[in-house]
Image (cartoon, rainbow, N blue to C red; front, side):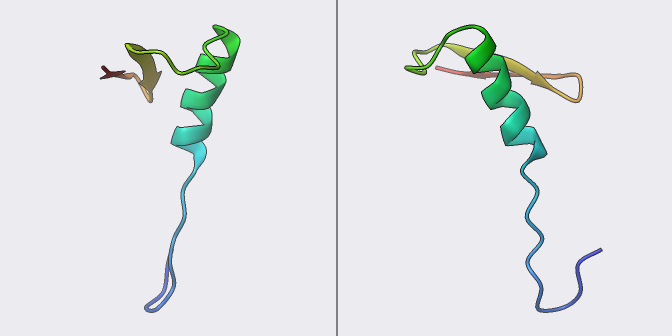
Amino acid sequence: MARAGQQLTVTCRVETAQQAFLQKGSLDLDTPLKWKVYGDSCTVG
């Protein structure tokens, strides 16, 4: 738990999305980008 004055950085969701793109070979990040995080579907583009 973050205390007053501390910044909490959570990167696991970003890392999960990046892994999905890498596994599909989408290194150029061409749209549409689709991935799931904790069961929620996400789309860009």
